[in-house]
Amino acid sequence: MTEDPDELISVYRAAEVPEAYLVKNLLGDAGIEAQVTEPNEPLAGLPIVPADVLVRRRDLAQAEAFVREYDETKMERAERPDWKCPACNATVTGAFDECDVCGALRPGVTE
Image (cartoon, rainbow, N blue to C red):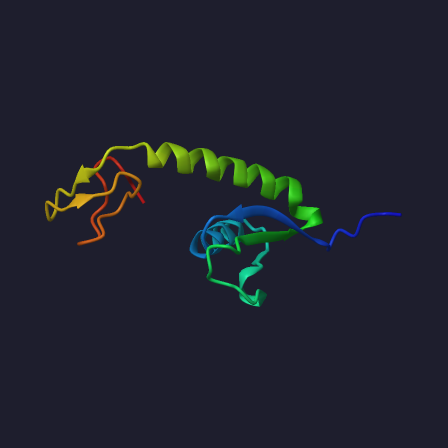
């Protein structure tokens, strides 16, 4: 029996629904169609039901490579120190490259 290339396979289990949508959108930007399981779950939004990001089997290898890179980058970003915005002097969480007060970019970051 051959595997269906259109079968949906979980490529990522997010701790929170917003992160699942972030990964889905990032995969989409990379040309990989993805879906999130959460909208159809009866307990959606509750922390006991993690959200899965699903991709078609034919895209699984590419999606897995993308998710590995996402996880590595996420860990690196989480370890960065907080920074002061040069435009408005607000303190910004180290994981972010854009000031959440005025929108200025972290020094050294280009769009």
